[in-house]
Image: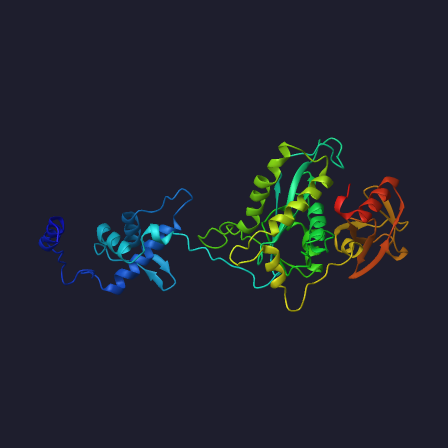
Length: 402
């Protein structure tokens, strides 16, 4: 035994032990149940009066209100007798029983979740590309300048397989989001990229795309459950929107490992950018899974649902889902005009106020009146350029122009 060890043992041996009273931890003026009830009420008053800067009632002020005015609780009206509660005693029991403000306002632990099989849940989001713009965009809206190069992404929750596309848009465009989801769900022509099928659920944020009625209608027609983040303050004191890492992480990886190469050679347009991106996604999905000893694409193939994948419908059928309702009055000649294009509907609908279901990707029009749907109806008069654009969009859903 060394000298240091001996002296350390002697110091511990001669140290005085803390001795408490026999009634330590038990209130003297009140019973244990009454003190606990008052502490719960005071802790609730502090939480209820808290603002975003963390300011709330003090213990002394809460005791004063409880003694002078009382408080309505689920158990009835409760008012403490004057002189029975002191600030130091209440603060002691608040901290001893876990009712102090720090622990009462602490965030609950985050719950990690993972789907049981592939295509059970997709995470959907979009982010602005670091390239900002391409040199020769396929379409430009007059008066708005070059559109932004936006990166659309879906990530399978179970396997982590990612599918992304570039789209030149002005802000968060809903039509581009629907085109991207159609391409993500259809079978790919690229070898080694079997990712396809309709998911059971899409998880996204509360942006303008998820709030759009047409987008929600398409998801409902495809029998996809659309789940969004709870708005802030809708789940008590818990922060709600904090589960986007599975879709945000691929954005960062693509921007750091792939888009940085644009300093050497930039794509001419979004079609060329998507061709290059598709090749990188093959490498990304071939990387190891986050917890299993195989790649992401292998995990997706191994955990396919027993019932099989739900195949995506044709582009023509998808166009019928993407329709925007508008309330219009049919003219006396049984015609109605939509953005300068005239449609001739059923003669019985002349003079009636109907709901028009106008397609976003085609030139067909459906009319709803008295829970009955008529159509499809086609243009009989209007700009000829619209027909050309609709034909182009029908032939090339992945590179459509407006």
